[in-house]
Image (cartoon, rainbow, N blue to C red; front, top):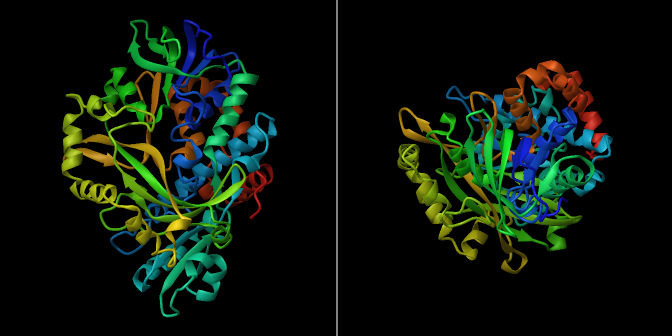
Length: 499
């Protein structure tokens, strides 16, 4: 990595803020599309992927919409809408192709360090939810993206799939589940650091750790003045840039606001922290080799869908249950308690108040969650694992997420739960806001940045190069079963997946 004590140049073509999966992905793509670009990455902590991309700060689900029931809502007429699920499944296939390209070019090695096969399952309790899941399964298997999805209500079959969850279940209890063997567990921290190492050591990208970007100001010539502080020497540096990308997790919002672009008006942030119950007990782990998602309770936000997951981190398996929501005024795990109060300004106060007023049940839900003790959390776990014992589970704090609040004509402000790219009209600054499905869709999101910010370059050769990196680029996988099969066979081989 570039030394924390060397000095940044006074000008770069591209400044990337944050050492997470988004900046690493965009930096790698830009360097591949034009190796002569002068690119710099500023990361405020001492290594890549210390915040949202870190392994224990997210669930590691390669979000492919196989198991997340909130991506397939039931319409008023009773039919199931799978359009969002198809989009998310396609986006993850783009990520897998991008990572396969990195392996093929030897930019990174050993895929097993960051991606492993792990079945994705949806599980519901009771006949009513069982009917919904059956209907969802029928609808989803009509799409070739999900044609391998299995469905069962049979206890013997369920005992084979999820022995830990089936322990101590009464034969009369109704459960229904779907299973996709194509699912994956991803260590986004390791993957990001592999890309970071490639950029720092084997490309001409400059990487500065322990360097915090404090302010971004527009210049009269259309360039950006980026104010950077070396957190070790306390030195301050002014860097000009033609293009700036803000991939700073929860800190993206205040930095975007500092740029004064009209597109940032009205955006606010609502920080939510998370906690997991984690088990390292090998006996339990042996009985649960899948990621199992169920439905969110009434009034709970989509990011709080309870799930019991197999995790594979640094070669070691563990089980993770949650998430339990927490609240902190910090925008990053290693941030400041003043982050939230300092983010409020006259441009977004109406949005913030409107979103709060129209989400009172969410506020009450968060208060209940924060007030929970370990025993109460274990009670929730026991809906999954009937005989869960306290000594087998420890509490671990997850990453800090900042949900987006946007202007809304009717409500004043609206809370959003997706991932969003904000770009100014001239395409010289872009920022990624929001949380889930986040890291899983990094390659797709960063290609969006390329399309919005470099349209001329895309037309003049970049599109052709992108097709070499992402074979399905420019085509809809949901409309092309032959291409889907081809792409999946390629990524299965390159990523050493074993479904």
